[in-house]
Length: 114
Ligand code: AMP
Image (tube, rainbow, N blue to C red; front, side):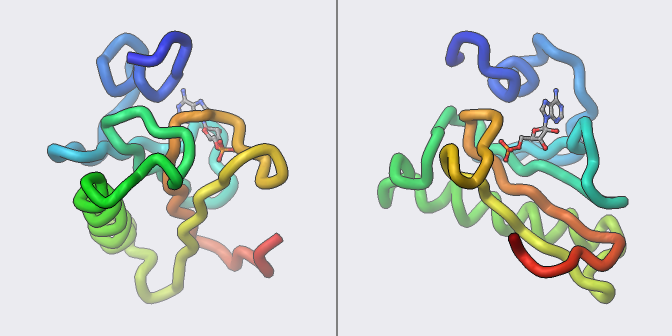
């Protein structure tokens, strides 16, 4: 547990949230301030801030995150219409929560990136 990390607290059940998916590597929740009709967050169980911390031994975690995102997009019914996966990293990207997470966005035209 990293002190004051919202996503660590959700992972540990200290902050209630509907867990849409959980496996040995990651879990998924709905974003509290959705930017699209589907806006999910896929979050590694281990607290990483940056992809740089995900050295090769953690590549199974990356695999699990993308697999979960793919399967959740299918469950949300947005594969045909399309969806976007986003990872914000650092200040210029506007990363607000320093526990790495993968946004899954879809259900409306999302416009150009940036
Ligand atoms: P980022 O800017 O990439 O760090 O995104 C952080 C995301 O976490 C934002 O889209 C927030 O709306 C979302 N968020 C913050 N707190 C919660 C929470 N308690 N439950 C679900 N989503 C949250």
